[in-house]
Length: 471
Image (cartoon, rainbow, N blue to C red; front, side, top):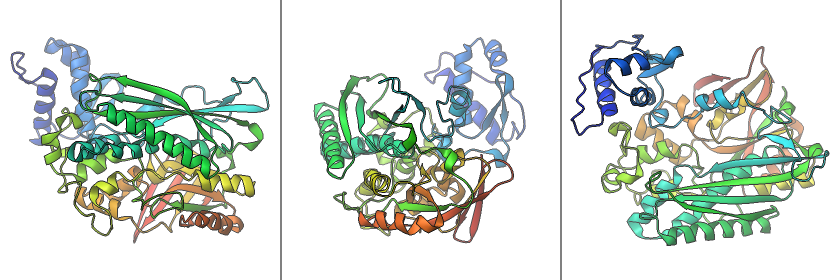
């Protein structure tokens, strides 16, 4: 494979490698299954740093054109191996490369639990355990940034604070956390683009949301946080949180409780609960990279180049037809309102079930990263059958229509209508639904669990199609 690299060009060498290999694949000079020279071999041939070559090949991998194999060798992918548009933008729904590392680490007291559970290192009580969790609002903060730049209204960032908190809180729920939670926030910003009023609203949003949660029975408190000016790392703002709790080991809910014969009750992600001030589109805080670029028009890329990674193919950047103020088809919301709809927490519902109906919840799955396939990571030899899902919410219909993303991939990236699953016996399903509806959250049995011969599998029905996933 010959490359024509020009060190005097204004185009970085790694980008020249990306463009030339991409061209060779498009023109069929490189065919599916062809093996590229190793990273070290390419670096030596063109007198380049190995990091330069690795960066270029990694970009092509994200574009779905190459697949990595052993000994730093990349192969041109076959059509049926091509990754989706989501990963081509530099994000991963299943985080396989991360799990290859973390799956080898200590998984805590209960390896099959939703969150890592450790001994009570804080108090030294052998009957208690510690749970600590970190997550954030992801790239949803960029949608808020675009809105802020267009309108000058910094209050939009208050919802981003909620997103960051909920992504931790609702994961903690899945191991049965029912007591006090302490949360700390970290804001990494580019101070030139996100001045003090942005930080002020992020702090106000966090305080207001924690106050609201305590008013509905969720014992969560602020432990302060950090604001860092990191202009070299981000062009906009990143909002993350870390939550910690101490609880009795006897109160824990672990993935070991998922077994055949359970009903799966899905708690809807749309509508307006009793503790929300406006309608929720159901978007949550996963898949927002895809949602933003598929829905919004090139105008935003042209006006705000700091809001995207210039290394990713331009055909995947702001390739939609909408502006933030445009109406969302099939909804009372605008596109911007739907994308920025604060992530709903199910904590009031779960706390009520845990406190007033102990033993009803057998397991909980927060359909965050991995969407409807998240359940596959829990239990042993379980066949998850989801054949009564909610109708697809308007925001996900629009994303799918705009992008042409296969429905099977949509269910891996987005929650698609429900973001919390309660696993219970069939006899208790009506009680779970009743409690959810007392908070004006729609709920219904969306599926069940059966035995699988080997490993975990998921059969998911969408209209007249069935999609199968495995783990």
